[in-house]
Length: 401
Image (tube, rainbow, N blue to C red; front, side, top):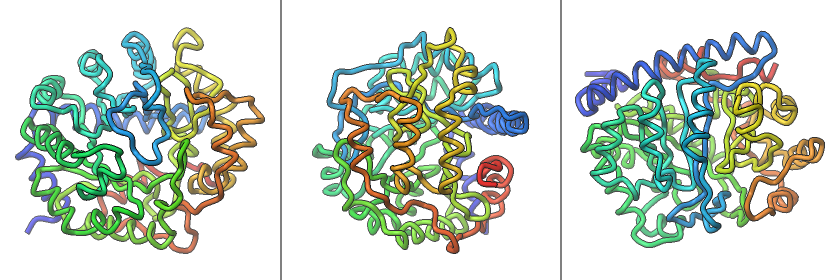
């Protein structure tokens, strides 16, 4: 009987397009590891430039999700194709090959496929609700060959409609997933786990359903109480966060599907990707932010003639954020210590990067909440593949020492 990891490999080899597998293995796997090694080498020199950059290319979206921090109901704004080219080309000069593409809904950007095809030597993870992915779009993604759609599912049909502010949401999302699988794409499903969907999604039957559909990996992340209309009633309790962590550990050992998490290291100790410097975020306006839910910035991607390396490595705001966040908690400073985040923003006179221009007021209204940091209740990685990968390529990088 194959192990869960070997079973995932076998299933992926049989279901994904061969060219797409090669792009994944080389652009994301080999070059991604090499990028992290360069990142670690820079850290020893006191220089922080993230190997993984997440880019929200548009604020527009067809859905209206509860707790969304993006101005999806405001006039559309997009990062231009030329600015994306400049950003990606500059990052590539410093070893980067992986970029997360967010929104809004990324497929509402008319140049998304063009961007992918302009950089065949890179790999892109597209965070999407799946609704725009028809067979024609999936065929374009297959032709590009260098992107994995990560499609969000937020619960049952009724829960999805409530969470996402529209009707018929789940069925259209599932259609997008099936289109991706039909066209041999490496396909993922992401879920923001909260009080209304934890019992439906954090269970073995849902994992089996994803496997049966042909999904290759999934990502459970916990709901963040942020944005203009934060819903504290959806937030998980600390014991629920731990139960999700235990569930992920169990499924990794028993099911032929990848389970991704970004908030714990190989020893099960909490971390914040932005605090470690392994990732930062670009807004739809080109603002250089610590992470997607921190909508404050002083720099833009157009600064320094588009030299994102210079802009990020010399940013006082990013440097102070990493130092202050790491010194306060190994979890999420936005949730646990919004007061400290406010001090950082004030100290640097950081600008509100939202269209609504209420981010400062929202920050003032946040109350301290628990995040993934739960000292004394660490759950170490059990699967040796995940443990090895996290130990060498995704952990604290000395941020908390």
